[in-house]
Image (tube, rainbow, N blue to C red; front, top):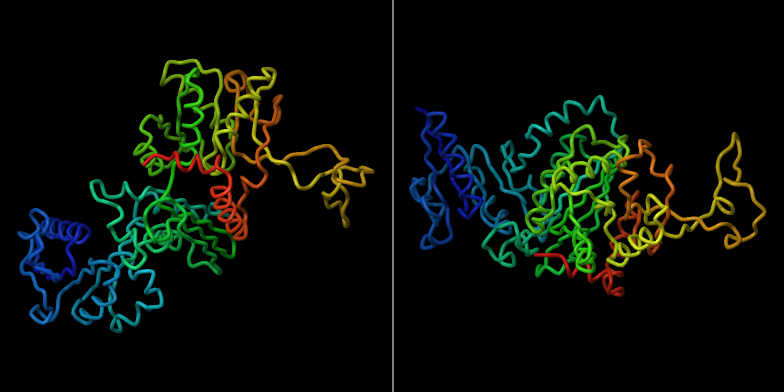
Length: 458
């Protein structure tokens, strides 16, 4: 019978999980596991059942065997560098829990901490899940030009019953911060697309969480054939907070809230703090950039009526990717719909900074011409035009039930004007920087924006 020897440096919650998994794996394969632990304090109690899984416990590595088949580095992140130095040459393979080093140690090179030829693995299993394997298999035929990854969660919910302020994620020096804590997204992006040619990253601490690590990190990566956007945070729920404020203001209305998404992770995050939200799993036929948004609206509307047994008068869509709106913005769009029953759709806009009658041009053959020919000498003389900011849509039942046309603009519609800098289409790394600065400015100087942030549950 084969015997596997393993040393665990640190046996907190993560180390304990890996020890139990390794024990089960060896049992399934008929192997004997001889697992030791290197601990800082033997008087500290282990979790239930863990001591029985160990062969020996040490506080001094000099007392331990000189070599193990594998060594697990699962102590606090800030101690990883020291642990790697101490176990250098002692393990046939190393398993290093992420993140490898803390934010204060980013100048370290992992290669300098390892002997030549050392096998080392960092825990990043998402690249091996079925969805990722299937996506990698199909990518060559899809020719993507853009990839967007969002990992949004709420730190106090990570470890039920544990004060989030005491864990490493809350402290930069201990290895916390979304930039180095949430590595899975970058791991599977590199697996799918390779290492980007150029990378831009903006990060910081913006929430009201009592932490000193970064809780928001945004990347734009440039590849030869595509751009990738990565958003990592310890936050979520801004759109739901705005909706909740609107609902509280209108007790006379009967309002249900639904989430139509193909992301189970997003659905779980919403359910954790807003359990009243009805989850509508989005089918594959409604996924992708080529599916008209109207089809998703109609699907949501029909399924909600079937689920609740109600007949709704209208639907309000708050786009989760354009969240910087206030309760009053929703109120304004709703009021416009109430005033104008002849309009099938009200959608939010902002004042355009360019005008096709004055300072917008199109290419015609070998030269440029005005988009719309005019004799205006000033933008103020031209008809008012607006940019659709994709933040709020109020849609009447008749459009969703009786209208076969998939194009929103083919209906009789109206607009509700929002602050022009509140919503930005993020198409470049510069846009991300602007959005971060604008959001903080809005929170600090516009109470209506900060009210939405303050109302977020949790």
